[in-house]
Length: 357
Ligand code: TXA
Ligand code: MG
Image (tube, rainbow, N blue to C red; front, side, top):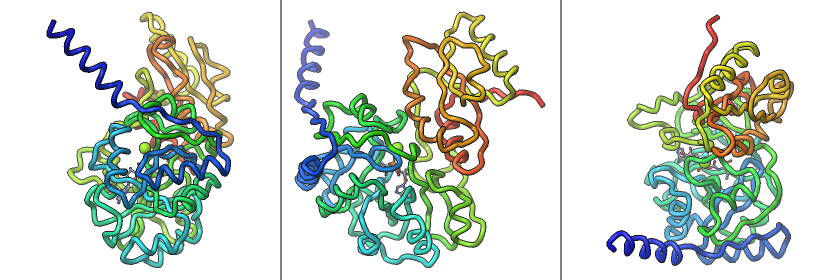
């Protein structure tokens, strides 16, 4: 009886907690409606040029708390604040260094986030108590419309359940967060497909703390000197970007990176299959078309790595445990956007198998 009672109570609790999530196709009326929800302290998902964001009024701590609840996100991982102008950035920071200003002018609106010293106007809920704040101006008309109409800065992480691949379509958001948020704005598939590049501009020299849509080379070209990519030693007591220490981008089944040529890759597939496992393959069209496996999913071409960036997260969501036991994925070159692609794949992976050279 005790068990039964427990189950009944749990069921009711879930029922009370779930809310009707509205699904709106992007138009002027939809952004009017969503901006009202933001202003009244609700949480809504919206498209940006990188991935879908889960937004709330950054000046309302109660609203921001709901983001963490809906995602199951650890509260010590700060959120990026989305604004629509440089003037707005200026109003939340104590200073913008000359280097930061050059980056802002070159890449915003666009897939860049700058971390700047906070003047305290953005609440601790957003910055996780840090004395810095991450800000960006998204380059998506729906996001810009929403920020302008809401007339408040919007705190927004990616609109996925914590630990899952980021959403690049409204359907992904629906799969993860239906019943947990007020509304989803469907503006189609996002373009870049990976999150913004986060650059810490609080030190002497800017430092990339998360590779993303803007490449290291593009940033260095604007600055006129080479910069560092922050180390991602997860054992570090105080990682530069708190988000570094959590598991991320996990597909439904384990993912293993295969670092080797086509024959080596096929040998790994055959080995798993000989043990009775169903093998899924995630690879470029160049490699995928010459491999044999149980399920092969093509994610773009190595000739143009931005096609891989655009399809990566959606590809990670394709493989279901009902169909495969394991995913074997290609290792991509780390040039250009490849740096961000491999950053995400390394985090999604349980293991790397390397060919002896
Ligand atoms: O493209 C993007 O950036 C997307 C879209 C929705 O804008 N947003 C996004 O947010 O990727 P999220 O929360 O999934 O990742 C934000 C990253 C985390 O790694 C977080 O630790 C870091 O930015 N971050 C935010 N504020 C920071 C700060 N003040 N100092 C250091 N890192 C910060
Ligand atoms: Mg995220």
